[in-house]
Image (cartoon, rainbow, N blue to C red; front, side, top):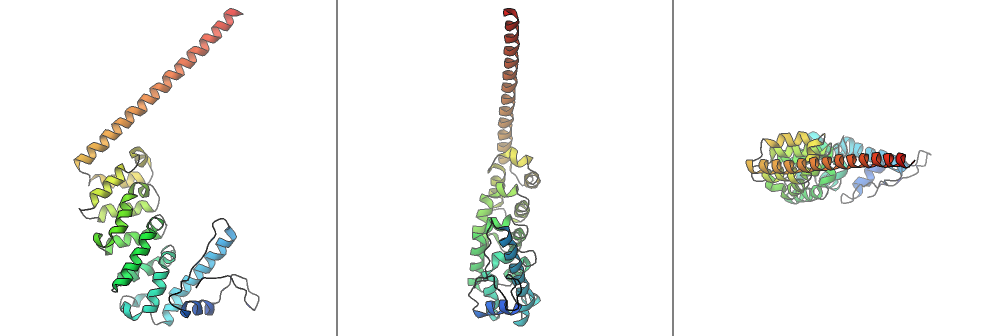
Length: 273
């Protein structure tokens, strides 16, 4: 099921894969994955591989589903137990699809229509294993946010645990900061306090305040903070500010001492000469 670069008989470029080849590749065995293997340190290979993946996803959306009489609009009307072939393709390619701007909605639509418990657990496990990658992705973060909307907190406990544990880090990243904002808004009263505490105290508080993304998230979380947490943050900030003031005074004192020593040495040098 791995995509390979091939040379066509009519002399087309080695990374050209015909639609018939892709179709046969996917239809050969629904349990085989359509995968891509991108080498980070080889830009040319990456560019070619991305082109192929785009072709595969385009095929998956526009032709494979059409030939199977299953379009995206029909995912919500045809029971998932009647589209087993499509289920396997989407589940096996969940991460690749979610990281693609044109395909993340395929996963969202699929998740919203799952009734087979096994499939739900499979896709939850896949997302859980790749949670940080998805959250920090330009398009994968939308999938994580979507889960907060359609599934109960207790249904995605493992995913929530990862989000909460890494809340401070994620809040300081461009795309994942949106995930934390969404979590602050949608988490129930049982786990929201954990999220806000991790967000506030899971790292340097001054760092998140000064971060261009983190301070927006923190401002949203403030209204949900209890007095105890606010007092803790205030104490930490006071201590940090006092320590910074102490260091600045120490630097100033050291500077004065150095200036004084240089002046003294010059005067002594002049007297000797």
